[in-house]
Image (cartoon, rainbow, N blue to C red; front, side):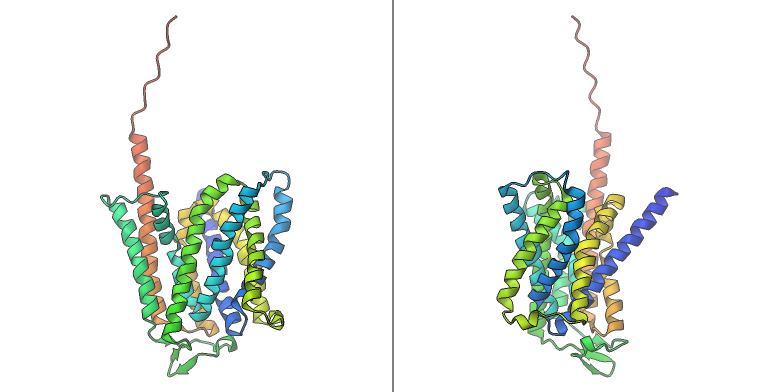
Length: 353
């Protein structure tokens, strides 16, 4: 009974986590459509995040934190550069050139790309002589096919239930909406979003060795966020030198910054750790398509056009995601059975003196 209740609680928390990410897609896209510079948004998001994380990390880790050497600091700085500030700035550009639904769909690539990179780095194995190895390869191929469909086929975009002013830059004709982005810009947006997902995947894969070098999870993340915030400030300063455009008013841009900074960079981190602790990383990864589903629903209600290509490409990528996850789970079960079936060596006989 307690196990069942724990599973239900893990699913509820995972659903809320995915809903938070879906809300981020919608609000961030709305802020960009209102004219907010993507790099300025990313800087404010990280600044809000560290204002939330630093006090918590100080209270919880001040007595147990391991010493921080210059070499470890350099590693943290590098991981923050490509995996946080670089990835999210590229993602912001990709989102501004495409749609919330397409970006949410591409996020389902993360486990498949992470597995592919882990194979290249020798951290994972791919045995094509076994069925689970073929399923892993098929999952990566499905994911690639999904991105291709997403990039080169937009199709009709369905009319939203409510035409919110934040998304009024789209043209509506007879129940079908035509996106404002030309095809070349759309393809660029899909490419940038995919590139940022690959960068996140690399960051995810390399967090294992990074946690071995500096084992404090909370402080590890907080320090990377601090480095990323400094990096994002200089990126934003180079991208937008008109400081008047840095001002925030009481509108969708401020709401998006606060929402993504506190809920995503702060609360969502703890929710992920809690779900992984209760049900494992595979269960958390299997809930990723919920973000796509919630994003589509919110988009239809809030006025963000949803293209048929985004839905089809997303479904193909979800298929690739589950293929990789199923294969990984099957491999773990097979290895566990082999380990249990292995004969136990006999105890050493006592030496007579």
